[in-house]
Image 1 (cartoon, rainbow, N blue to C red):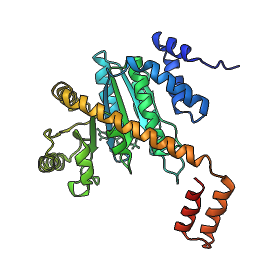
Image 2: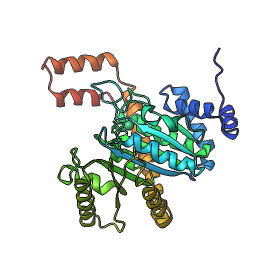
Image 3: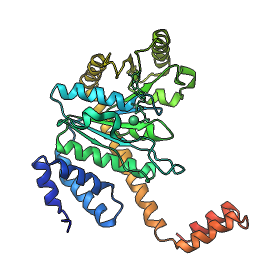
Image 4: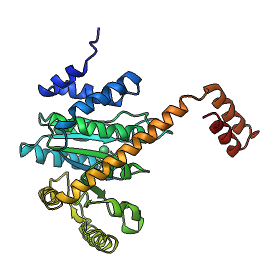
Amino acid sequence: MKKILSIDDYINGFAKHDRTILAKAITLVESTNKNHIDMSKELVGRLLPLTGKSKRIGISGTPGVGKSTFIEAFGKLLTSAQKSVAVLTVDPTSKISGGSILGDKTRMNELAIDPLAFIRPSPSGETLGGVASRTRESILLCEAFGFDYILIETVGVGQSETTVSQMVDIFLMLLQPGAGDDLQGIKRGILELVDMVIVTKDDGDNQQIIQKACHDYQKALHILRHDGVIPNVLSCSALKRKGLQEIAQSIEEYFSKQNQLIETKRKDQNLTWLWQLVNEGIREKYLSQLNNQMIKDTEQEIKNQSLSVPEAAARILKLI
Ligand SMILES: Nc1nc2c(ncn2[C@@H]2O[C@H](COP(=O)(O)OP(=O)(O)OP(=O)(O)O)[C@@H](O)[C@H]2O)c(=O)[nH]1
Ligand SMILES: [Mg+2]
C-alpha cells in the first residue's frame, strides 16, 4: 500500500534533499482534495523560513517562440556554473482543447537529466487561476528545497503573463519578429509588464529584421516606461547558444542593481496573493453551498431561452 506521508516526512525529505519528496510535495499543493489543501497550507507554513533566497524568473511568449529551448540553453548555462535550477510551467489550459498546449519536457532533454535541475510541468485540466495560485506554493517549495534559480515558463495567452509576472522578480518576454511579434502586434499591456525583452532565433538570414526589431522595441520601451527602469532588449539563439552569456549578465545586473525594487515587488506580490486566496476561498465557500441540480436546471433554462441571464444570476445569488 502507498504510504501516506506526514508533514514531518515531507520536512525530513526536504532536509535530506530528496527530489521524490519535492515532487510529492508539489503534487500535494496541486491537489484539490480538502485534506491535502489543509496539509499543504501547514507544509508551506513550516517551510516558509527556508524560502526567499532563490531568483525567480518568469519567461513568457507566444506558442513556439522558443521558450522551452531558451530555458534548456539558459538552464544549462546556469548549471554549468554549479547553480541549481527548478523549472515550473504555468499552463493556461484551454477548456476547449482540454489538454496542454505547452507540451511536456521534450525541449529540455539535457536539462531534464541534469542533476542540478528539476523540471515540473503543471497538470492540465485546471483553471488558470487554480494552477497559477498553486504555482506560487510550488515556487516556495522549490525555494525551501534550495534551488538557486526558479524559471517559470508560461505561454503568453490570455491572463497568464499578468499572473506569472505577479510571482517573479524578473519577467522576460520572448519575441520573434517576423513571426507576428512586430511592434504593432504587441499588446501595450505586455510592454508595461516586462523587465527584459529577448528576441529569439537570432541565427537565420533575418539579421536585419532582428536588429530593426530590437531597436524598435527598445525605443517603444523608452517611450512607454516611466517607472524608472527601462527594460533591456537583447537577442539570442538558444539553438546556437549565442547571446546567452549577455542575457545571463543582464539578469545578474538586474538582481544586483534592482534589489530594492525586487524587495518591494515581493511584498506587493504577497498582498496580491493574499487577496487572491481570500477571493478563491469566498468563492469556494459560497459556491459549494449551492445545489447542483438547481444550477443545472437554471443553466438548462438559459439554454432553452426560458430565463434571462440576469434573472438566472439573481436567482443563484439569492441562495447565497
Ligand atoms: N532557429 C532556431 N529555432 C529555434 C530556436 N529556439 C527554438 N527554436 C525552434 O522553435 C520551435 C519551438 O520551440 P520551443 O522551445 O518549443 O517553443 P516554446 O515557446 O516553448 O513553445 P510552446 O511551449 O509550445 O509555447 C522548435 O522547433 C525549436 O527548435 C533558436 O534559437 N533558433
Ligand atoms: Mg514550451
